[in-house]
Image (cartoon, rainbow, N blue to C red; front, side, top):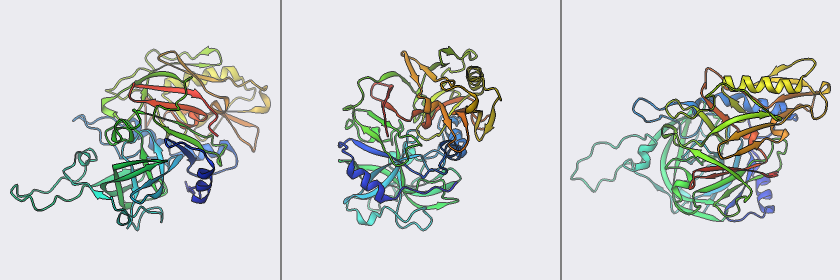
Length: 433
C-alpha cells in the first residue's frame, strides 16, 4: 500500500501551535487516509497487520534467544513524533513502536533509503560509531569482531555493523551514538542504528526512522536511566481526525490521576513486549463465554495479551473471537445478517438496526480494570454506504494462534500509561484529537 508522509510544514505549524511541555510531544498520523471513508481507510491500513502479528507471536529459539527484527514487520507505523538527532539537532520524524527496542534512522549517504530527508552524521559534532565489541552490538546480533593480535592495542576495532529484516525488506546499518532530542529534552550518547542501505521494497519502511519504546536494554526508558522515572504514555488521535495530533508524554509528571492500572507481565523470551492479563470480555452487560484458559499467559508459548501501538485492529485468538462475535451478533440482531469486508466478518446494514443497537465491548483485566471501549473504537462505519463493522478480528491461524493483541484502533482517545518502574499499564479516557 502506498503511503504519503505528512508534509513537514504541516507538522512544524502544528508543533508551533501546541503548548507542549519538555516531556510532552505531539503525536501525528503518519499517512494520509487511503479513503474518505473511515471503514475503507482502516481496512487498507490493516492489510499488512499479518506481518506485525507474525513478529509479535514469534517464539524464542532453542537457545532461548529470540531472533527478532530491530522493529516489527508492518506498513509504515501509524503514528510519528518529531524528534532530533545530533549536535546541532537535525529534525527527524520517528515512528512510535512499543514492541521494538532499537531506535534507528536513515542516514546519509543512502541511495536506497525511502526518503531524501536523511540524518547526516558528518554534520553532527557528537556522532560516534560504536565498536563491534560493544554490548549493544551483540544485542543487535551484529557482525562479530575480527580476530586481532592481543598485543596490538593501537589498531581500533571496527564499528558495529548489522543487517536486519523489516517487513518485506531488510536494511544494513551501523550502530552509533549521538544526541537524541525529544521536545526540550536532550539525551546524550543515545545508541541507535544508522541505516546506510535498504534491500527490497521500501514502501513498508518508516520514511525517516523509528523510536523504540519497548522494554529491552536498547529501548528509550532503558537508555535514559532515571530521566523519565521508567514511565511514558501516549494518547492516539482517531483515524477520523487526520489533521489533529495526540501526545507522547515522557515521565511520571502529568500522567492522569484517574488512570486504572493492571499489572504488566514479562515474557523473558519476548522481553520487549508489554503483556497484560485479560480476564474476560463483555458485550453490553453480557459476559462473553470463552473456553477456560483462553486468556492465560504462558511465556513458553508466547500466549497472552499484548498492548501494541503498531497493529491497526485488535486481534483475538480463534476461540475468543468466535465467542465475542457470537455475543455481538446476538445483541445487534441484524435482520439481513452479516457480511465480510477485508479483515472484518461482522458487517451489517445500519439502516436495519435501531440507533444504539450496537453494544459496547469491555475488556476486563487484572486489578479490576474494565476498559470500556468507546463506540468509535468498537464499531467502524462507512461514510459511503449504510454499513458498519465490528472493529476487531480473529488472529490469522497461519500467522498467530496464541497471542491476543489490543491494537491502536481500540486505543484511540484513551491515555495508555506504561509504568515500567512499577510494572503496570494504566488506562484513562481522554480526547486525544
